[in-house]
Image (cartoon, rainbow, N blue to C red; front, side, top):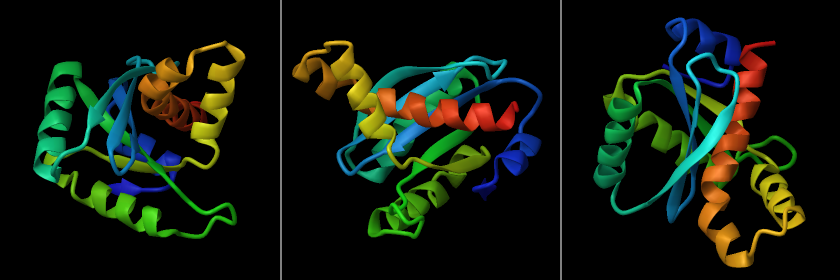
Length: 152
């Protein structure tokens, strides 16, 4: 199941269980995880993209190792809310996650990377450390937005 509606996504999930947030880029996939009670999201790691089968294997290992019950994938919409070429590739990526057998929530990721980068700059994180951590931190920002919407 793939949806853009947080209530539908929440209804498809078991009570509790960890969620993974994904910030899908052309070169990397930022990964974040939340606690089983859906209270807070934390950056986890960045997967360097290769071919899709390798990406899927890495995500399968994550799902199995962390007992993930659902995926929140950042959806890169244009500022006016319309689809962009990246939006279409992200939707295709989400469809290709079907072998994982998990519900997928496509969540608006507008401003996520910019917000995280501003916070990192304010925290005086070096440029090198920002580059290393930005994708997983953006995934955490996306995931936190989704879990906040589901637990209101």
